[in-house]
Length: 233
Image (tube, rainbow, N blue to C red; front, side, top):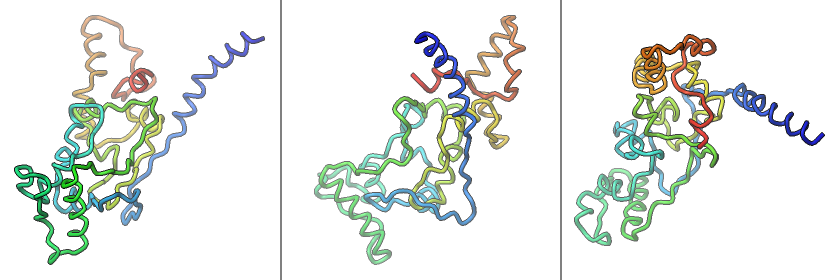
């Protein structure tokens, strides 16, 4: 009886995984969307930095294209803009250069907090917004290098004040992109398909004479592997 129960449990595992996949939800950015993420220790608005000032994502999240984590900018990166020249001085001598209180008291006060962190030699304790379970891996570098845009997963952050989680980040949501069911812009989709190691692998097998006719039977527009080990390792 015990063996039967174990066997039944093993057989039901794919059903449970498929159920997770079927529970696909996507949050859409709507015009006038007023959703806000958690309060942060400093009022860093992406709508100001990525929106008004058009700072590229990779300027702050510089490790996204070469490591698994996108990373958070060090305080030194921030004071490089707000307290120019501070990198050549002892931290305690750093002086806020922008913005001035005469122009905007609110942003001056927030930027002063930044300089204070630099003077104390402390990292800014940012509150994490996109937090995956420990058993799930999302290698940023492979997604960035293949041509996926940051907004595809993170939404239109250039319109957000306090960044919020724009997508579910659930298993089904990720799989829908790998299988090609999630819609991408024509240019983004073309770039991803051109650089996809999965598609390149299938083409290499076909060129070597292997029978790959069954590959696109279920998902004819598949972009990436859906093997469990891709995300769970």
